[in-house]
Image (cartoon, rainbow, N blue to C red; front, side, top):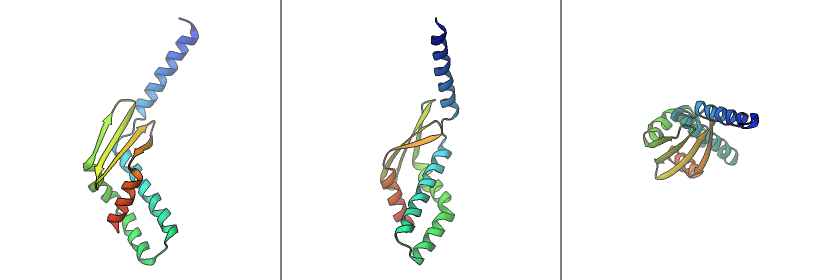
Length: 123
């Protein structure tokens, strides 16, 4: 074997080890969804600043963690493939699929619809 082939193998193995170490957990996924909901609320606040809605949003912000934990967590399935994870949530009549790799999350389907439905439930 030549030196560049060994170097390529070492780099590939290093990448695999890094991906395995940074494979997201279910708690990280729930934190990601909570952050996405907060961003959606911030966008909707800019569109319609209403005093009553602001109060409801403040209540939602203070209790979002409990809401995510009680509604989303029981309906989430994590498929751990070692280097990456696939999170599937079936809650509020919405199917959400998110890919977690390298400590980041990439929505594949249903995240926007889930945020809208979750927001409706809060209001």
